[in-house]
Image 1: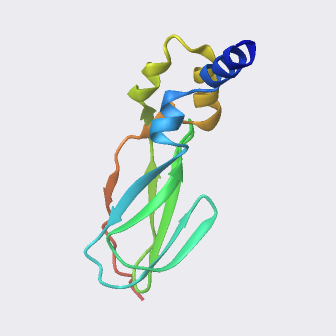
Image 2: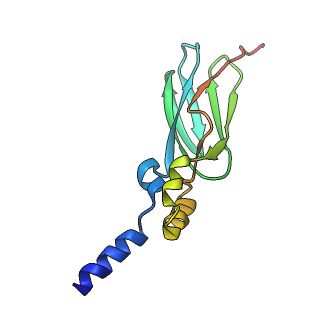
Image 3: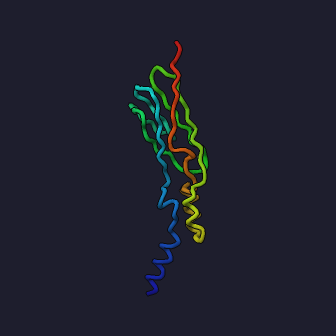
Length: 125
């Protein structure tokens, strides 16, 4: 009985609603009317030969995330993804250990928008 109680207490202390329901990464959709293939750089990861619309994963957290998108024949576009409070984190009101885990994983935030339209400007040679 004592062992079950300890396991139950450990499981409750390790729970964090925002991390469980939202995860530590978020999907953001980038879209444009450009038909060409793009190169997308987000948080040091490079995705090549990408067609629009495309989904990229960004880390949750308190800092803004810059995404650079390059298409041949067009000037590069940089999208700054701002973050806001994730209301799912409120499910942890009675669980301080859950708050600590959610803050550590960044799950207490989410992207302000999950869809971004990119307006590419043709390069002038």
